[in-house]
Length: 239
Length: 336
Image (cartoon, rainbow over all chains, first blue to last red; front, top):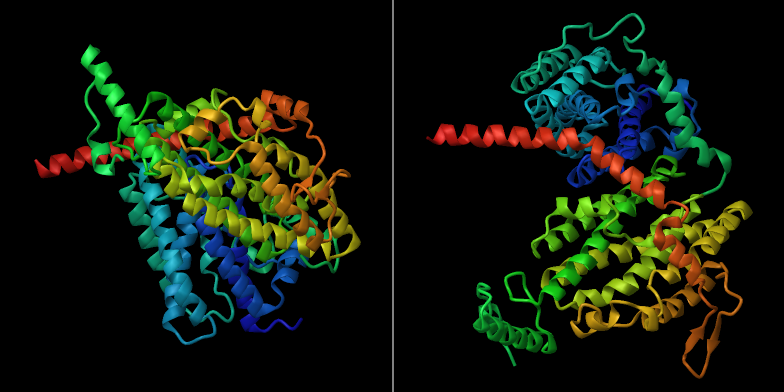
């Protein structure tokens, strides 16, 4: 397959949506309250829908999802991080949905190839961001235990947030403006939630842009092994 | 004939006197007349205690079945073999959570909270459908659950759309629409496998072999052994007997299995011209009773996962309650 700048960009954005959707799908039957079973599945379904459109822009959605090796995936390391406790899932969602909402709003306003998808997706993602913000407030400003857990989760995932603003070739936005807006938005929510904005580095020698280059974290290989096993066990079969 | 308006007036506080007994008898007559006239009983209407407790038991069991039933299917979400199938399966499991929500709400209209019912589930005092104590071993099991388990559930539930208790009947209208969608999706999944590679066909046949008999058991024990049936029929909570519904299900499945190119695992299954129904083999009720008693392949696993999810979520629910409390008092201060 020839990878044009456009299809490389579609892969990067598509893999983000595919991988986070998968992680959220792992919550099914295990959510802390029935309403969250519905909400997390809803977000997972929206992301899967986006992934299918984006991957189809780059090739065959199932070949891309099921037959690539780990090193060929272009998603951010943030989205492949294991669910952890509910606080980790919410922190990951807050960081990612804020990014995706800002990015898609930009893309929707332009006239590039991603504009139609972004225009539809930005409505969904606005809800995802709101959901993550509401839970960040409840957990941050809830009980001593929830505050502690949310603080730890925000800190643990902070190191994966710098990668989001490494420019993706073929995605025409002002990445540094995007980063400024992201920091403002996330910091404001964390403060309202009585949480400190983490002070650690937002990227390191290894993490800077690593997912976009096909370098992932250890849990991702196991996630893909589970996701791809059945499809790969029946080469050429249709489902 | 009692009208709904008259019926709703039939409410008064209990005071333990002879007058009360007379009033109760009068209310009961109004209630019986409403049921006989196929009117709906609504939450604010007087109803016999036993009617209320029967409904709570049945609706709770149904709600619990929806949320426990998420587990065997969620087992395959992360391994679904195509993105289209993955989306369908996720949406289905989400629908089940939604059904759980409507049904717990229907039970709440009878004065029983979701927390109370969940506690009864977690401590084994209320049951869920035994079918979910069987494991989903292959991808084809997802199809077999859709076709057979949801098919059996619909056969049971369509008559409940006319159940005498209004909130339950209305919840069932929506549940049944979604369930029939799931049933068609399950059928279509199995059809793709049956017409696929020899390995896929084999996977589909194996799943049907394992799910057929447990699906027939979903209609409950034979009519002459069913503990709750007669009273529920009289109250129009239940409209058809277990055996009638089971027969209806078998008659529906036989031609569908033929179209699927799959064999139902019952050598005695054959059309009986005289009865106008299919005859079928004897059900192993010993297995049914064993699974019901807790000795099925997944009883322990299902309830353990449910309890764990609930316990691990306790701090999240506490946080939400604490936050809501702070903000409610904040609002009161702001208004003061």
